[in-house]
Length: 192
Image (cartoon, rainbow, N blue to C red; front, top):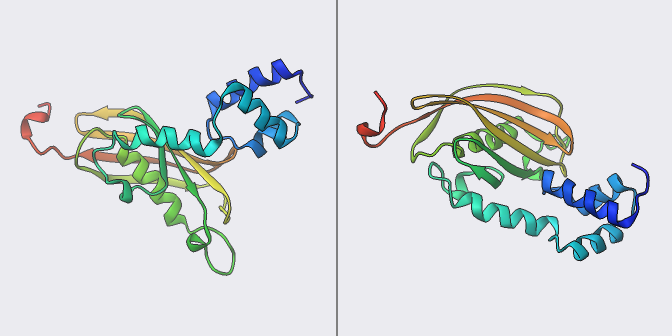
């Protein structure tokens, strides 16, 4: 992207952050080919909070909707949730998740992030995973930030098919299809 006039850059900055509120100032400075300080000044002028505050604001709303899991049971940080539609979670890949001699994150952490996001999507107190078909597209290393996005693809009564895709920046690192079931406490809730 060539260097843009300030007004145009700020307009595009607003669009980019609206599309992806998890973009850091560093990533934005690379995209717009300006300094990090310029991005910070643009954000201040436009009253756009920093990425941590944007994430926190989204997370508070998302966590309040989840019925099937307690917040400590969710792997990653839930930052957006539209029950029985779609959701987003973040996971910082830290050293404790990695194989000690390679710095590569163990797959079960990536799977757990996707699975807990899929379960969180369902508007029910009891949701269990029945099956999962997953693919790891490339190794994830310590220090990378995983953004998982889930989308409800199909629902038949209490059975839900949810697709989850996890990316590091713009690169897909994991994808999966999760079949989850809602268990109703009251039989009258089940559509017969």
